[in-house]
Image (tube, rainbow, N blue to C red; front, side):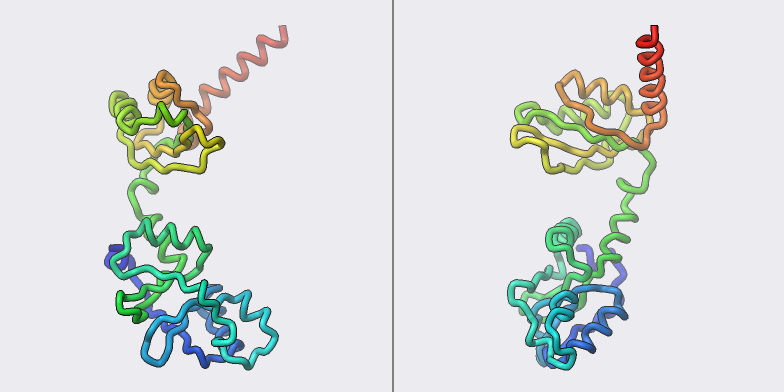
Length: 221
């Protein structure tokens, strides 16, 4: 699904007989720190990492000496872009091979390809407030969130779950299509949602600064 949406430059894999010094040169050329390796029949063997190549100690040795079978991450051609992003983030890859079901190597996504794809999505590029909120698991409801947003004449462009501060809560990021989010925050707070952070809302930041200044003035007297 992502392959049809992202322009992929040809990304030729290395052969197992490629020398370590040549592999390092190719990595510098492509600006990556992971490189796919295939055999003479085009079957994907795995990835070699720049760290493993630099640590080996013999620049003229073949990269087959440093291939780690556990480092053989890949995605299928029809993989969803969220699966691609998850794989890149989980294993901190700078290139992610695309491998057919029969094991043949096709190409690779570069980290820059993945970033470029998500940079072009409306949910990220459209102006709007970004709210970080948390709530007890028992209170979490996507319907409640959507209703709170839409009842305030706004739209929810995206929702991403984050690692919670405690196992008993749900932490999330909400992307809105409006920059004035105070009514939405107030609506969600009535359902025990807690605001942890906000950006992209100048009105909220101005209101917060004014309330802070009023508090400071009160404390002076």
